[in-house]
Image 1 (tube, rainbow, N blue to C red):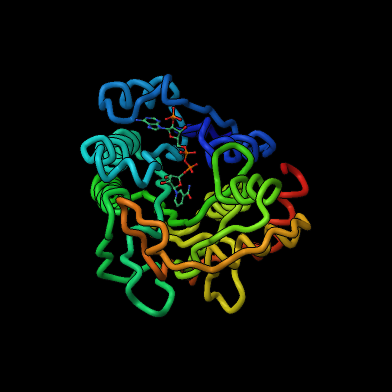
Image 2 (cartoon, protein in one colour; image 1 turned 90 degrees about the vertical axis):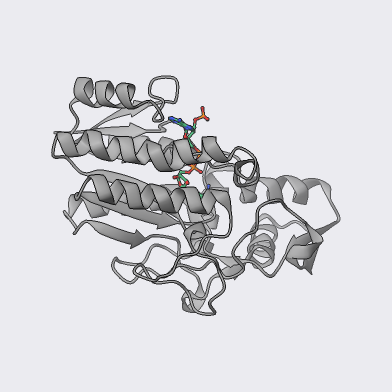
Length: 283
Ligand SMILES: NC(=O)c1ccc[n+]([C@@H]2O[C@H](COP(=O)([O-])OP(=O)(O)OC[C@H]3O[C@@H](n4cnc5c(N)ncnc54)[C@H](OP(=O)(O)O)[C@@H]3O)[C@@H](O)[C@H]2O)c1
């Protein structure tokens, strides 16, 4: 039985990670909420890792408010960069692996093709992306047994997300404008959690992985296309209009082409299947 410390266990991904690990006979997951372990406190990180004595740590905790990060810059770096550093130092001390979750926002989205795992330069265009990239670098600097799992556009049962928002709007609105010029890979947290467990089970090489639900020809889809699919599955008659990013000015810039390519692992289910499964179970 392997003890796995899951940090950020009450977040959207953390909850599904706990649920799948609990269902697995070989794993004993120990979840930590922010109240139980604030990863910005080095002493606390050391103490909890010492007390729990895990065989592995999975860090699902992050500062995920992309807009607010533009103003709370220090806080974003503390949680997204130094938190992973402290976890990497504590895990290195015990010679155990760390799984650090990251994002497609480490890339600037200016290239036409999807981004591979080893692609450089990253050149993030917002504070969230820059702080997550620094977190990747620090985690790998302090522990050589690190899995960096980049993912994107998450939806799941345990957090606010695009699918919930569009479903709610579909129930009440006749028309809706949706951004059509930002492309990414929607990803169901349950499928992501399973793909991470597969990596652990197979003792895959440490390094960077891109894990998302798949899209036709690996080309990604826009928020507009994703919203259309949600409306179609739910049978809402809401009329959607495609608009550009400029229609909804935000503090944080977002990559236009944020598609990340999984060249190392089996492909995850399609985003359509993921959406069907999620909507049937949860909305
Ligand atoms: N959501 C997306 O679309 C998306 C896309 C790409 C990558 N990711 C990455 O995927 C991972 C999981 O994201 P998610 O959407 O599941 O995030 P989430 O729902 O926002 O959960 C993050 C969790 O981290 C906790 N947390 C925040 N600061 C902390 C601290 N200092 N110490 C300990 N815990 C802290 C939060 O607790 P409180 O609720 O108490 O603050 C929350 O439970 C993150 O690494 C994120 O960067 C997410």
